[in-house]
Length: 454
Image (tube, rainbow, N blue to C red; front, side, top):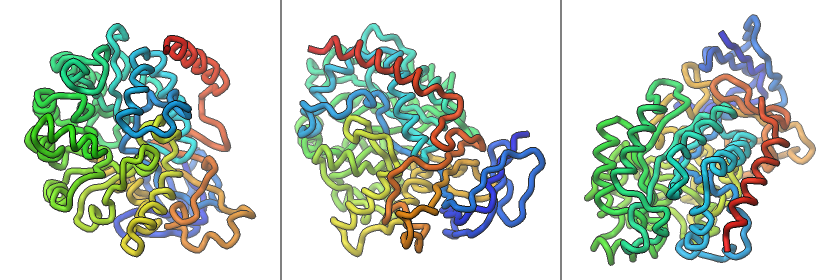
């Protein structure tokens, strides 16, 4: 039996159903599960982490990412681009990727995520160049396992390329049959629906302007037959809305609904341009939204109606989106930016700092269909992180630990991150990871791919 004892935390922000804030308590985790929270806890043979100077929070849950974009950051040519032009440039990169490139980009992005308190990550991978093989997502699972990260893999696709009137290049286009066959392979090989699962698979065609109606309908059938979740981009930009009206004769949500893509097993990335009536549909059907504030700001896409969604009961989680449109995999940073964005846009109707933290924890967990993660409570997974707040620059800033990450923000890596009861990151060190070696190998992969781009 593995045991971990988080000893006498200064404050524990649990994000549980009672919104409990605990002081001076210890947390005992056995075999990945929280088994006790209280005073004077002892456990023979347990690894002990001293948390007397620390705020402890539930591990952060990212509901939308593109890990391949770790190597597509800070590119001068697209710093001022909006989504469609930004994609057209980056397709030139993504047509050249291979499984090794994806492995290293995933490892780099996942490492950053873990260093900033991340414990569960969903990735939406869409680039499968002809000749690159089909084991790309297998390499992502490999990277996640090396880090000890709880990983949900979204098997995406492009089935509508340029010659069919879509946006992606034809080199990245698959048939519906190829896509569904690989979805089945991945589900059968990796998907674990059980409690405290470390691996899940999601069926996730990319977007209205890169897939067709057939693949949406067939993927919904497959996902429900195999009891896995569904994910896609929707209502991200006005260009997408215009495209849907021209190609499908209806707005994005109406098209998705016609394809069978609403319900508690579905969530969309972005969801910026939903009308008030469409928000009502999301609430009624319990269809979720992954809110990506930094990406939406960088690409000038707009502001998601998160306050209205929360008021009406739409499931909403927080996400970083891809590194290319965020330039980071830091969900901790996303919390504060999300808080400030909605203060600017909604004033007194904006979520509090604590409510944004809950979006990134229990809210995101619900969007991913999980009730075993997202909070610190007996019976939940041992996923958490801690930050030392006994620092000069934080004097006078600790009055509200629940809202601290939203209102004050925290720009440093955390002191430790625990996933499934295991310390995966502590005092600046990723457990079992040779960062210098990985950095050198990753840089070689980046150089190889970018040398092919004209």
